[in-house]
Amino acid sequence: MDDLETHEHDVIVIGAGGAGLRAAIEASTQGVSVGLICKSLLGKAHTVMAEGGVAAALANTDSRDNWQVHFRDTMRGGKMLNNWRMAQIHAQEAPERVNELEEWGALFDRTADGRILQRNFGGHRYPRLAHVGDRTGLEMIRTLQNHGIHQGFEVYMECTVTHLFKDGGRIAGAFAYWRDTGRFVLFRAKAIVLATGGIGKAYTVTSNSWEYTGDGHALAFRTGADLIDMEFVQFHPTGMIWPPSVRGILVTEGVRGEGGVLKNSEGERFMFNYVPEMFQGEYAESEEEAQRWLGGDKSARRPPELLTRDVVSRAIRSENLAGRGSPHGGVYLDIASQQDAEFIKRKLPSMYHQFKQLGDVDITRQPMEIGPTCHYVMGGVRVDAETAHSTVPGLFACGEVAGGMHGANRLGGNSLSDLLVFGRRAGKSAVEYAKSQSSAPEIDADEVAQAEREDLAPFEGRGDENPYALLQDLQKCMETYAGIVRTRADLQQGLEELAGLQQRLARVTVEGTRQYNPGWHYALDLHNMLTVSVAIATAALNREESRGAHSRLDFPDSLPDMEKFNLTLTYRDGQLECRREPRPEMPDELKQLIEVGPGELTADDVAPRFERRRGF
Image 1 (cartoon, rainbow, N blue to C red):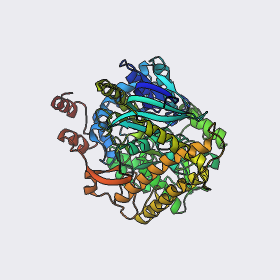
Image 2: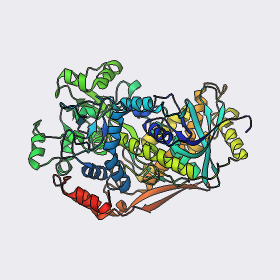
Image 3: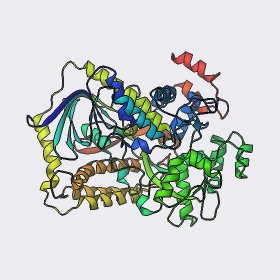
Image 4: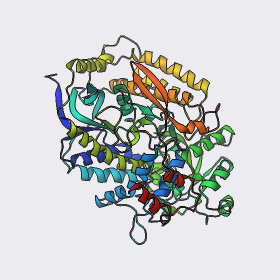
């Protein structure tokens, strides 16, 4: 260990997307030493791919909006499996976090009187998404980086963490390697914040970039933290589908928020055929409004294309199974017939250039061919709602790597406000924990040596397994057996194949040196991808119902009893345990917010009474 490059901080943040940057900013303001580790370059975070907007009940576009309606939408969208306290905190604090971003220099689109403009989005009752055209995530990262670089934290770019260490029960540090040289580096810390994002690269078709290999999920799991809700993987209904080189790249929900409609190969707006009852009860303000939409009347407030992502994705799949899909297995997203060209170029500049440059499609003149793409995992590290603290002392999690906030299905735009709200809380709580430790934790030299041996094993392998071939087989397995719809037989087959892939992983061999060796990088990433894949398939097999993003053909109904618990996964003695965890009881005041009917909830009645009782 004496010869090993070592850095020591009070708090280490792993991941430099929106959640990680917000956590690092908050921790740095508390006067402690903070290190920020990012797998790629600073600014390359997947947050930049979040295009449509950040959800916050600012009530700038519709004065009826408030945190209570936002909370209600989030819980209903999550099919009541959300951690209700996380959903409450999120809805209450999101407006302040968005206004804070504006104070730090974020340039949001504006209303006529100069306020932050908000647009419609799937699952949100009122226009709620503050946006910067269709480049909101990029603007958020720009703002957080520009603000964060003045806070004094150290940034370690192109550095991948492979192991976490504990001293007794508490977190002690992390083991990593530099991606350019392959040299190992040790980080000592009293507290660690995971902000590593999602798991999308475990699937063949995904909007996620190469970094999303489930690193934080797997690191936490192997360190003893609980994972929760891993069966819920969200497939965004609109990803690019042609040409093959761009298959899966996200087409923002903002296209539908600005008036885009979904059509099948026969030119029919098919969404009305799948969810008219749900559309009327949840989103239309009256039966008359629903009928106006059925007749194509634009005077109604919301289209059925803006139902929740799980509903739209399954509808697209059904159209293809019925033979009404597009030539390449998707459907058509048409905004050209709904808006003029200048409006599209002004409101959706990234989408215009993306399709023009990558697909030779002019979206101001012709429809886009789109289809579902693996986009987000609702499941993640089980954390305390107030502090973002995991079940391992000193280990915190925020953003997509943390579970509980979104329940069975995430509403569009909630991810960006989630990472701001809980990134801040995680950073603050990590500092409080670090300051509470009377002594710095120790790292066992033998554990460091073992971590080094495990990471170098692919160079010493005698097998004939290629990491790229293994990755393709893993992605095919997950796409086939744990995709948009599942069955017991498929999931059992998937778990058998994953067990075989784990055996093959032990025989993976890479050639060359440790410098700039992507084969070696994938060989290490595969450990994490297999860990999260097994977790997803195991949880999906154990939830014998359909709910939100988890759809079982053999259990098509949502069962009331299954709403009472979350599935929690724990790694003990080399074995995965899956158990039912009873959900905390929601206070009666919040139940009232969930049960109140459309149009009945205002800030003038329920809110003051609730806030007096709860002490806000």
